[in-house]
Image (cartoon, rainbow, N blue to C red):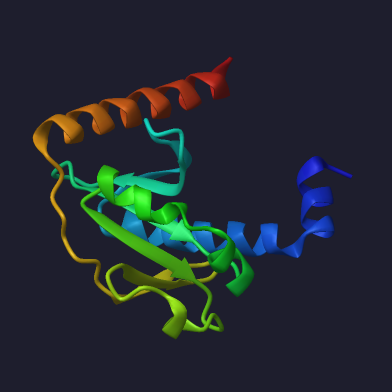
Amino acid sequence: MSLDAFASAANPAIDDARQLMRGAARLLYDHGYNAIPEFSLASSRRADLFAVGPKGEITIVEIKSGIADFRADNKWHEYRDYCDRLYFAVSARFPRDILPEDAGLIVADGFGAAILRESPHHPLAGARRKAVTLRFARCAAERLMRLDV
């Protein structure tokens, strides 16, 4: 049994989160964004999905596989300092009324997603945008290099 299969069998929420991430990443790609999962920010926090758009706009998507996951995690507030837009991605059965109104809402499954509520736009300062974009580029290049080694 592979480690991924074991993890999914031991904790079905892991598989649910992967499916939500897959659908949200496909949605971002359809909108011209390139996303990478589990992106480490300078604050040492890790964004579930971090995406850069065609004009350099930065979006973070926080994946929530269940109510307990949402209630146990308050670090998403810190993500606003690193993106222009912040979204939550949840399944269709997630109770949306508990999510904050000042973040966007994506409903996803393993095959795709839809934006139900746009995120407010909070443009990053130029210096922060440059630093975050450079970090994104280096992370993506390192991951690509690791695939070929």
